[in-house]
Length: 344
Image (cartoon, rainbow, N blue to C red; front, side, top):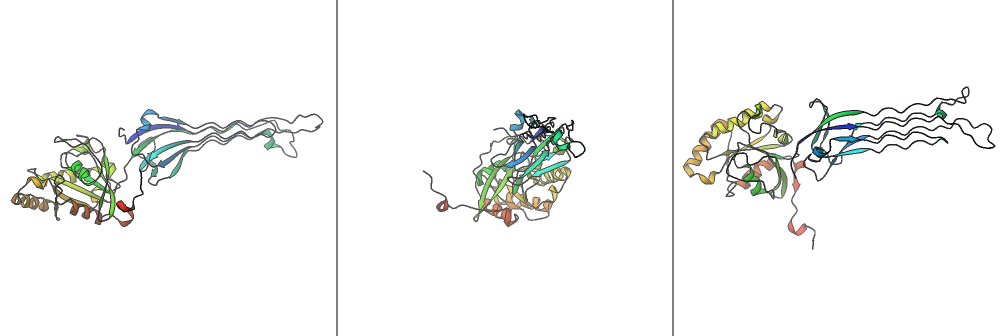
């Protein structure tokens, strides 16, 4: 399944049915009177956050969602049936924006959350509604109200507890593959990761979700490389894991490049809690490790951890550091093997 995190769709709610003008005419009934029924209401367009989706790819193949119109009223006081609603099933974490792409309509952060995006038109009144003591044979009925048509943007921001940041080939996908069941593409060339990946990692009896996004390069905020298109997927994270390639000759400059891009992106992304890690230390001897760590700590102004995603060295300590910065209500308890239900 291809990953798509931005889609533009056109929605239209149903129009209300027209009221009916009718009079009761039956044998042996001398004064029938008006009996025109009301029109039915048009269907709504509703967005619902559902489980099991992590992409907006369905909206690439269908961009128009029109609810059904209400049925017109009929004689014998028959009210027209209401139009059927249309439900847009979106992944949890989807933002719904106005056509300008900036005004937020709704943020679908909870499973099962429903939001009415376009209300259906009310049905018109039939002539029986207008009957009074002084007007006992009205010959007027109201038309139904028109539905609402609008264009909206759907923007997906994945729900994750920790986000991975770093330059291309910093070892983010290797770390995700080593700590979870996710299998992102891993290779020795830049921009191996072309779309975000999610993985569930566990440490000390607790589980949390880690998001891996494509690597950033200098000028990403201006559109270079893959740009900052995917930074929105780590906006909801409680903590960021910043990986720096320990084999680089410019570890301090590599760190500053990512920080500058976070600040240029705006929001509070640059102010989120971060765990800075010197990665790929299995390729360095002890002396070079300490030298690279010292250079990096001088730039960061805080302690730096060392890790190797390939060999597993220091991975558990890094996971514990991430876990300590995630609030207890976001953590999930690991299911032990003996507690899992038996399956044939």
